[in-house]
Amino acid sequence: MAAKQDLETSRLDDAARAGWLYYVAGNTQDEIARKLGVSRQTAQRLVSLAVSERLIKVRLDHPIAHCMELAQALQATYGLRTCDVVPSDPADPYSMVGLAQTAAAEIERHLKSDTPKIITLGTGRALRATVDQLPIMNCPQHKIVSLLGNMMSDGSASAYNVVIRLADRINARHYPMPLPVFAGSRDERTLLHDQPPVRNILDLTRQADAAFVGVGNIGDTAPLFVDGFISETEMRGLQAVGATGEITSWVYNEAGEVIEGLTNDRVASAPLLADSPRPITGIASGEQKIPAIRAALRGKLINGLITNEATAERLLS
Image (cartoon, rainbow, N blue to C red; front, side, top):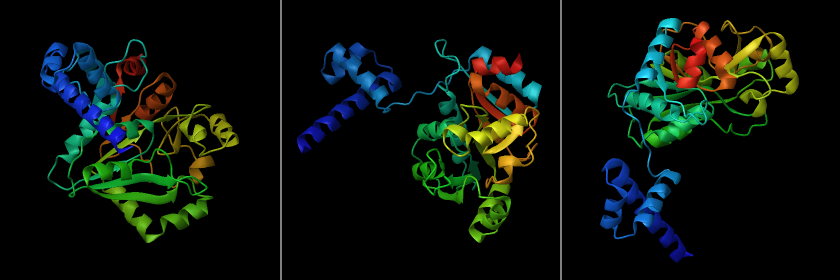
């Protein structure tokens, strides 16, 4: 068993070295083969292995003109503070490829500050992918704070909570919200929010220097429904009153107005406010999410956006 583990470690070491030579040092595969003393075919396989095992993360630094034009148009149309548009994969134009790398670069910019910052985070697949793209850092001066609860109704941990995951990567103090995503009732939510640790976390969210959130759609593929946070009956009730999207589990209509009642009576998340004075960046793309993103932009629930070409074109059409 030990010999097998040693062999696997050696293989990954070779793959990491080949990946570094190719993507960082700019060597050709022939040059890598010569330097590592292997065949060209082996060098090619090692480079591929480095990518598949996520030993190498590639970030595109060249601004593509069309993406920049779309970003500028979105900023002007929706009054955004910031906007980044990444290239779309022609074979899968609405995929999240590229979003996580760009969002990670923006979060990293905040983390490199020597001045202590409070960074708040939502949850979801896009944010988890973003955190995975961040390098290992040492940031004890910063505070990482969750905008919403990290538990399902049965007490199990939410699969896409990212605060602890990020804090582990950057060695920062972190404040996961010790609550279910939805309380049992409005009164129960009030009791939960009155607990001293929760009050402290909610105070931190109000002081945040930057927030990063996902944008969820409403319907049969909605994360709130698919991940088991709300029932089908609750989903149909939301659709009946014109629900279009959700951010940190707060549901809003096509005008970007937070809906009164229904599941919003029980959301334990920090309040979702329109036209916030702090930067709130949404990270989202995809055909199904376009109505939700457009509504969030209309209602100024977010004032920054990271998306891709295909989504940006639809938002501007």
